[in-house]
Image (cartoon, rainbow, N blue to C red; front, top):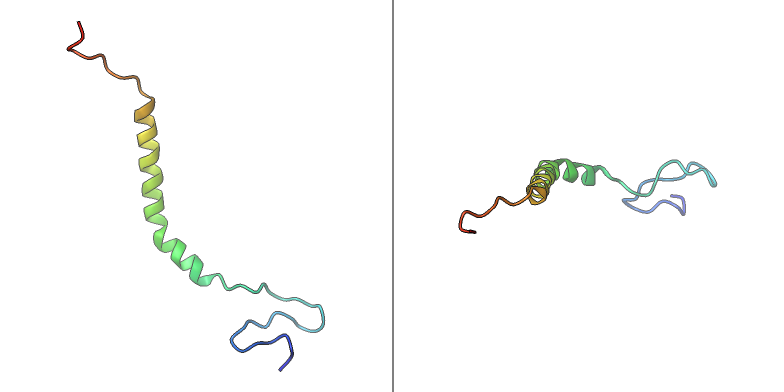
Length: 65
């Protein structure tokens, strides 16, 4: 085993100073982001609707005379 290889780690080098990959595995993160994407999209849609409603002028009150 080379000095750059740890148990369970991703082999990153092919020879001296020849880096082949990053040190991070992002597969689980990507899976999690795909899982929560519908919730995020729903929140963005709701926020846009809420902001649009806030920008519309208020209706005049019937009780004001």
